[in-house]
Image (cartoon, rainbow, N blue to C red):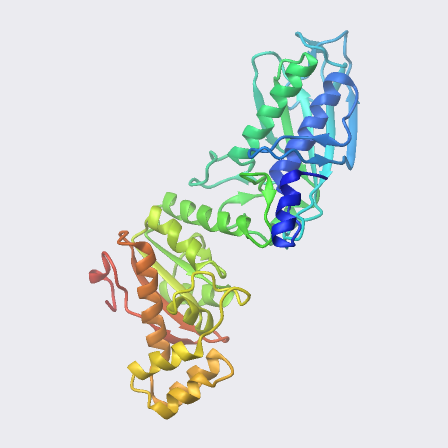
Amino acid sequence: MSSGGRAAQLKHTGLRPGWTTGACATAATTAAYTALLTGEFPDPVTITLPKGQTPSFALAVESLDAGPASGTGTGGTAGAAAGPASGTGTGTGAGSATAGVVKDAGDDPDVTHGALIRSTVRLLPPGSGVVFRAGPGVGTVTLPGLPLEVGEPAINPVPRQLMREHVAEVAARHGGTGDVEITVSVDNGAEIARSTWNPRIGILGGLSILGTTGVVVPYSCSAWIDSIRRGVDVARAGGLTHVAGCTGSTSERTVTELYELPEIALLDMGDFAGAVLKYVRRHPVDRLTICGGFAKLSKLAAGHLDLHSARSQVDKGFLAALARTGGASEALAAEIAAANTGLAALRLCEAAGVPLGDLVAARARDEALAVLRGAPVAVDVICIDRAGTVVGRSAPAGPGAEGLPGA
C-alpha cells in the first residue's frame, strides 16, 4: 500500500498509519464491481479517500461467480445468488464478484488489524441504486440512537458514501449503471466484535465498517472515541437521563451496584475523560457519574483529560497540596510528595484521617464541570481502589444537582 499522506505522517510521527475498515471495504467493492463489468480484477486497486490520499490495496481474495446469463447486461436481484442478465450495461454475465482486502492498521493497536474484509457486488436492475447488506461478521443495528436506522447493516455513513462514489466512477468508466447490491463481510468478525463496544450499543452479529477519513492514525484511538460518542447517543435515544463514564470493568461494577444503571448507561471511558465530557457538553444528559481508579482520577483532578500513563502522570506534589487543604501536616505532605504511587499517597492520608479520596473526587468533578462549560449536566465522581472499594466520592454539582441525593 502506498500514499503520499502516509509518508508525510511517517516523517512527523515515526509511526506507520493504516487504513480503516471503511477504506478496505471501498477498495474491495471497487475491485469487485470492476471485475463484474470487465471480467478482470484490478490488483492492486487504488481508491481516493475523503482528504485526497490515493492508497493502493493488494487483493487477498478474488472470485467471479458466473450466473446463467443470456447475452450482456445487468443481472441478478437483491439477495439472489445469480440471475439471468437483463436490462442494460456492459456486464460479463457473472452473477456476482467478490474481492477481499486484509486490513493493515499500521502501528495502531487496532483489534481489526489483519482482518480479511470482503465485498460481494451483484448487479441490480437500473434505478435500484446502491443497496448495502451485512454479510457474515458485519453487525446489524438493533437500537436507536446510532447514525443508521434499526435493521440496517452497521456500515457507517462515510464508508457508504465512499463506496457509492467509487461505484459511480467505475460505472462511468466501464459503462455500468451503478445499480448494485454490496454485501460487506469480515472473516471472524463476530468473534472480533466481542472485544468491542458493539454488543453494548446494539450492534449485533459482528463488526461495524467505520472511518471518516479512511486513515487510521496510530494511537489516536479514534474507534474507541467514536464508540464513546455512539454510547451517549444510544443512551439518550433510549430515554436515559443518567450515564456513567467508567475507566474499566471494576468501576462499571461499582456504579451498577450504587445506581442500578442498565448496561447501555455505562460508557467505556477508559482513559478518554475528555472525549466523554466534550461529547456530553454537546449532547447533554441530566446526570453524568465518572467512576475510576483513584490514581487515574487524580490526573483528571489535576486538569488532565487524557488519563493514559503515556500521556499524563500522577502528580504527587499536586496530591500533597490538595491534602494540605484537608488538614494534612507539612510532614505528611512531604511523605505524600515522596510516595511511590498515588495509591500509596492515599493510604498515608487514610491512616492520618485526611480525606484525600474525597478531595480528589471533588476536584475532578469541578474539572469536569469546567469542561462542560455550563451544559445542563449534573456531575458526581467516585474514586475506587483496585478491589472496587469506594475510597473517595463527591457530591453531585452543576445544573440540576440540587434535587439529587447527596447534593
